[in-house]
Length: 392
Ligand code: PLP
Image (tube, rainbow, N blue to C red; front, side, top):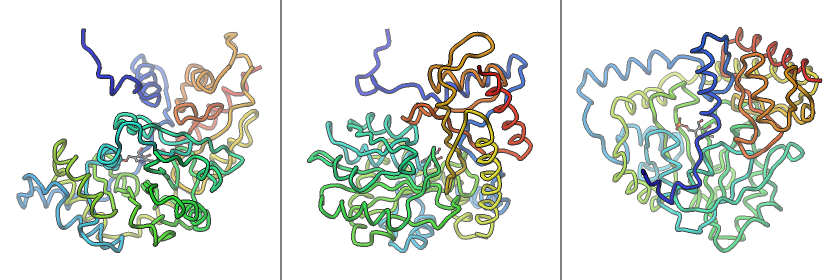
């Protein structure tokens, strides 16, 4: 028998993937399924970005790249962040940045403070790297954000990182400058704790976005920011992300990357360069479209009996409570006991795929992605309402 390594013993197959596969199977059987479950913009990659990729290929940029990234892309990122090239590492998506970061820094038993609800992959990436996840529950009553008191209480001598994600997947919550500064005041008292700040949704924000680097300039020596082109420029398939941080951290991550994937794709890096250096007006245009959809979804959900949600400040998700559906019974006589039951029912009854909150470590909720067309959104809201109205 194939023996799975102990290292991955506690790593589960993603619940998001489970839902997506169930939805795909229903579709293959000819059922009418609408998935509002994925985390990728429905927009096309901008034409000038695709053109830059074609030009790079034609110019022979098809060889191995330097492990830390092409000088052109590192410089483009560095210029935006106000740092030197040495402070930048280019990787195959923000996801690889996160795995490089934890593989490069965690010894067995080292702890990472992870405010929840959080992106599904964080806990598994940390565990995979040998770390211990310290999940800190941050509910709707605190805007899904960790407080200074919670942070203070979670820090131990083994804490290596606090992992922030603003705007957040799945809640869309965004930390203001003063909220980041309150966390910074705690961290100043604990010099062994570093900050990992995942800012991949920076440009999909409906209020003023503040980078942790800008809010806490005196802590940049122990801050690593994670970002990339996937969400902002609709480039999920190109797989380009980056880290901005102190050189020692960048070098450690580069060494990990050098023995796993090497330098990221040459063509994709040329495309990412064009995205960063080209027309930026599209960022605001797309954010305005997302904002419009957000408003529609928030009011539709709050007008649906048994469901409610807060107003997210960024990203393209609504994280809604389905707590009032628990204990209700479906037309086929099944009792809804959990958020997973609720999402299963909505998928079976209306062919609408959502992701249960427990996939993000907060039960009694679900995540709906509004990175889809207006028509699909209208359809999705109607399906959600029809399903919920059937519960008695
Ligand atoms: N960080 C967060 C919070 C995300 O939601 C995602 C994608 O869903 C990523 C990182 C990964 O981004 P990339 O596609 O660049 O690997």
